[in-house]
Image (cartoon, rainbow, N blue to C red; front, side, top):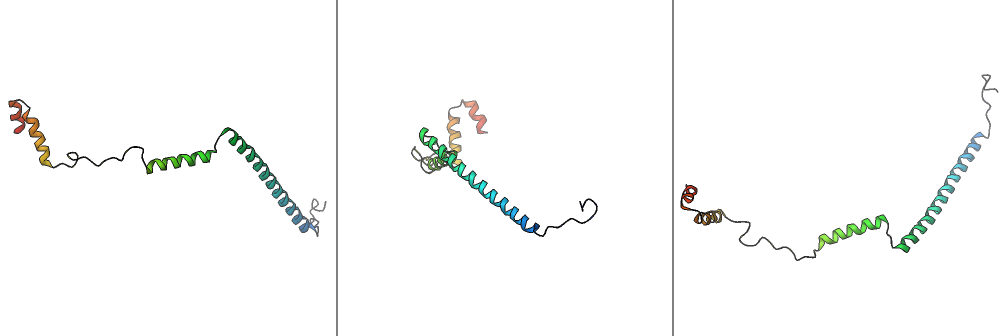
Length: 119
């Protein structure tokens, strides 16, 4: 009433102590709640694992890890023989070889066409 009439609020001398106890009780309740949820989740995980074992299923993380390992393993070694380098006669050829190929093609062309390409 004192506050409603414009007066000062009555101060409880044990208010600080009560507030501290209330905060401690809240903290303790929160810890108990978290512990309860952790136990429940552990129990759920046991059930999940028994189902995985029963049906031969794997966790999503395990599947991803196996896929990565398979990719890495495939990169390391190949089931086929190793590829050879570029065979001789292919790839790095000089200009002279290209000219000789052109000359070979020109030999098979009729006379007038050979004259056109030579010029």
